[in-house]
Image 1 (cartoon, rainbow, N blue to C red):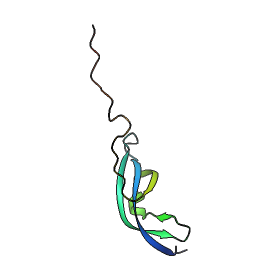
Image 2: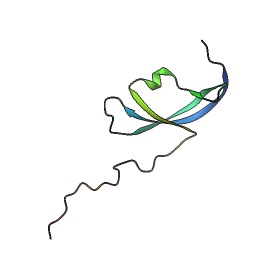
Image 3: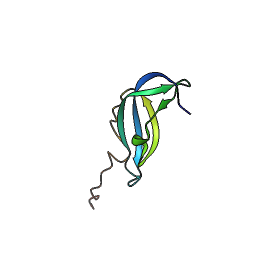
Image 4: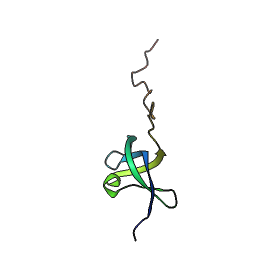
Length: 78
């Protein structure tokens, strides 16, 4: 069954790589097909090896991710 295209949209996809499910990543996909239900159709080549968490309209710049500000240096003993 072929999906009818209503328009094109840029989206940011948040995902975990299947081989490292603890490292959240993002990718910008330009000019993606939007179907008649308003859903973005992500090509299978962009789904392979990924656990997709969210699809965000437009370009989203991730400023901080879980653990980015975590200080791994040991506490000093006073």
